[in-house]
Image (cartoon, rainbow, N blue to C red; front, side, top):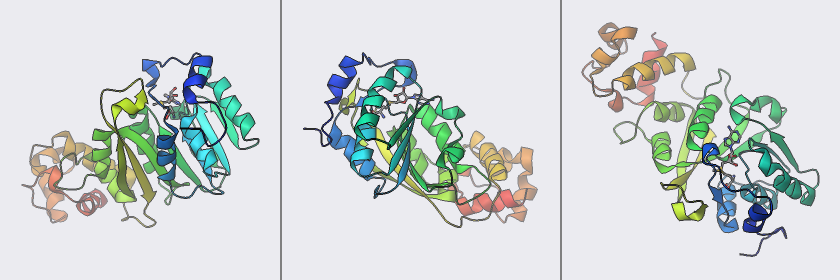
Length: 275
Ligand code: SAM
């Protein structure tokens, strides 16, 4: 596909800058600009929006975000080898791309946003992505500084994010995401779309904050889901023993013979509020 932005094909960029993929950094690059546009479009209109992109790599997704009209992209990349390629994109879009070399897990995203509403878009190694997602969902203050999260994960993680009670994959991540966001899996991306191909199918998940989630302390909710899903095959009277067991469940009016995976987000919040 001819690039919409007049920049060279990503394959050439990667070859010219010697960006052979590093496994340790989870580098599986998306080179198809149709696909990177599809990912960026999942975030909704980007016209006039500031986007924080995590893990731009050689910049395929970055280019799509800019081509779709984002006012500004702030991109955090850990691999210094990618910086010259990203600089070429920054030169092509003067004043619209700021690249920060660093570890996203140590980045203060809220201060980067500088009070502006931002959309966050990322294609990250899944362990980094999951940890960041949890960090973005846990602040005490809500609604958060971000308007939406559009994140690529391995499909199984996407299924955990959107799963609700009595569904396969339901667990701590599903409770947390269900409590504070509306989340959906937008579309899958097969391994062969990446260079090099990962072992599993990926999926793009889009999350938007619920303006007024059920009142609950994040720490307490974590405590309950940690205990409940830590022993997910056991009845709640057993798994919740360390934090109050049957007495707690009686106060919450929840049958102690039930198991964690049958409890709704509302029921988890109810128990957490009684701790
Ligand atoms: N966005 C590009 C794409 O879609 O082709 C690259 C995606 S690749 C799966 C993940 C990128 O995240 C790599 O460029 C890698 O160097 C970067 N990365 C990995 N760990 C990171 C971290 N902790 N902080 C920032 N970037 C990271």
